Image (cartoon, rainbow, N blue to C red; front, top):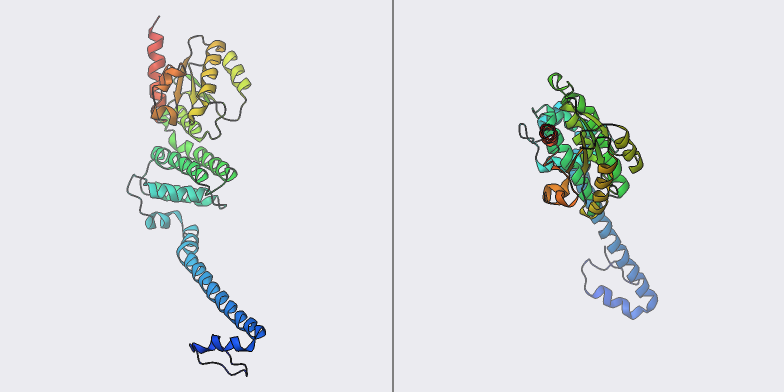
Length: 306
């Protein structure tokens, strides 16, 4: 932008004398000059904003729109999933799709993974479960608020239920005659992992009761009035271990089955299995996938003891 002489003729661009010459014309002339400089800075700032917006459209918005309008097969062909595996990069991308208002994106992503030959069980353990952890990390890092995480975890549970029919194979649907009551530790906010464990128990023929959404009083009444071979608790945050100790003690006292087994699992016990002794549990589930087999072995061994 050029400068102007008092007579209105422009100074040549880059003339170093231009700004100095204003000083001899007093405050009014200086105000005019200052206005010209301010406009120049504003234009440069606007140019930078437009450049940033353009890059965002090119590298973020357009690719997401392309992904949203592709079929599952096209998504599968474009995403770098290894055959039968799910990488941490895909988990992170999937978690962001779960937070999207478009509920079909996450399911389309799962379908594209399945087209690569990934099993439902692998989707559970290598995509859904890690995505729940990523959502929690988003919250800890202030990338989204608590309500967004809660809604996202709700969507994960919906996806879990939609996939559960595919997880149960005909030869695994016969009942094994065992019943389990699965409960979150009082105070736990997110219980997606517990819902996933329940699906694995059902797949292995267990009759499953409990889950999130009921009060502790309702759990006590259920344990008091019905026979369960096992009561399982999940614990994600160690600061709630005191509540779990109290809850385990109560369940042992009121249980209809006086020899009921207590199983614990979750991130706290995965990191520190010895914590099971603190809560007076009988057995620890190393993972949701292994929990039913570990539970059945424990119950069977207990029945062999007079």
